View 1 (cartoon, rainbow, N blue to C red):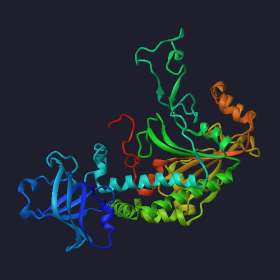
View 2: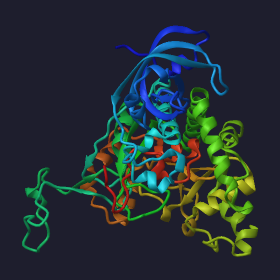
View 3: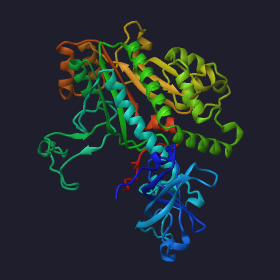
Length: 482
């Protein structure tokens, strides 16, 4: 039997005869008022059951999360809280849900920690339904933005022999039995006998491969899963997450900053336009959560204010050197309120420093640029005019309120000799990157790109505080459930 989405019925401007809805029971009150949700919208539709003409056995089966079909007339509601309701003519239970065993009891307001243990069911709650609809809309907006601007979508490999970040924190891929890998004479693993004939890993970034395509197609982007084997059991890290990585030939760092700012504002505005009900709910959820915190720990802005803050303010562009001077002379640093005290140029900025710059000092989104070469990746372009003791690269990070870094990017090093020297200095085998270096041998040119961790974006737009709550099935140390 065909059915209508609840979203469409709630948007109706007039009563409709003989509508059919399929969904899951949220609540059933007084043996009469049935709240149904089908996932198309955060709001439930109320179905009024004729309990006098419905068998007691059927009424008992109308428990939380039971799947149901109802047919009846969409009529103006007699009660408060909804414009329309369904006067039920026919009710059918498609799938029972044992009320004694169903793990998520909404009336008890289960904690986020508990819901992570029920990741297969948590999306049936209002909060997670809203988060995942916003996530879906943001994903579409990303593709739409780049497609409208003529970018080519490139699927870079998930299994790779290179380490784009130079960090070494990767998941190895092998067809060898865990305890019976063939060995060389020196006792090391003989990867020549492995499936790919060499040591391979799950990708940490599609950037290097995307660069090669940008140097033929002009402007490309990747949007896919990436993996980091970091033992970081924090609210900001995942072992498996999604990355958006545009690469553009002939763009310098200024062009790169322009692109990143325009891109972020576009996708946030798209979410605000397409998800008003979900974001209104998440805004209220965050407001209620903030009230439980000590006054000193509460955010100065609501969720919707933060989102509009990013849309309404130009991003302030500040050099790393200027930022260090600001932080060194700041009150939190002088009074040793920072967990990581800034003492000298060259320090790797922490989230607390980034948030101070955005939220307290500049009071707008910030793009930091020209970082010390020693704390950035090998592929970033070396600045020619920096003194030897303060060598910098054409790197940039975008900092947001409440979250810190959300984007990292750079102008890439296009000069073959300098890139080769940087690779050698890091002890990377040049033979492993022969294909990457070819782009500098054959038609090299200035080019730039950046990476945005998709879950960081979803975290910011939804107002959640733990990154495990904005991906369907989080992968973290000691946890690969579901």
